[in-house]
Image (cartoon, rainbow, N blue to C red; front, side, top):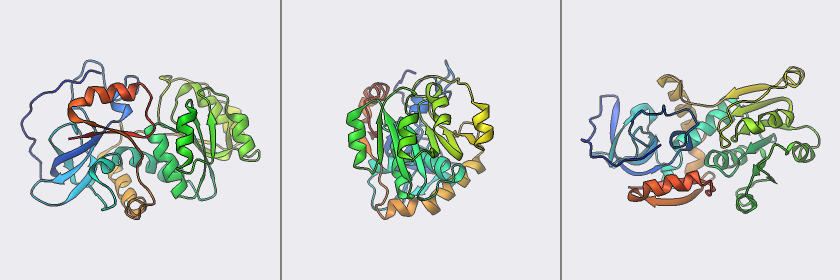
Length: 302
């Protein structure tokens, strides 16, 4: 995907929207990297998916889903607007919406994660992986994470990563079983893709749940062990906003405000920002994301 700077008229909000002066926006792999299925080749659209800023004409600070977020102004649906707690600055707030809404959907709404359960996250150092680690710990889970970078795993120990596994290969089953005393992981977040899907299934506990959320490997295919699915009563589900209706997205926002926003307000949750780029350096920020060097979120300051 190529990024191109263009002058556009200031957007006009409808009665169900807010006009937002954008202060910061974050990068999301699903939009900017080919193979994630969110952008059709050859189509043009305003870039950026979520932002933090001020509602024009007020002192209200909001964060939320904002299509075309890499701009001075944008319109946000009122149902997507989340008040920014005083504990977060604009850059931190911009790193929250899409990522932590996905994590809320994945861990709470669909995953039913409970305190004391084992959470396995493949590709734990990516933006969604780090957020899942932080939210998992806040919910009282024990977290196992895989990454190809020993340095990133060391960094994530400070965020409460219980069992770091240094690998990019589908070879983590034995380490997961050892950590969980042979039971397996109760909830698995597959942030890597098809190359580790079968290993994720192998690593699941009885009545385990598997969330497929990302494709760091670009692989969209895998085999399913139906015997394991059947005998262990497993649940496999996808996490994407691509085909969701506005009311379905709104239900996740409301749940987030009820369950996660107090954790941000108290300081128990705070997004991990790897690097902040100036708006003029947006192409460099995209290149940096594609290099897979980041541990946490990449943010653009406007």
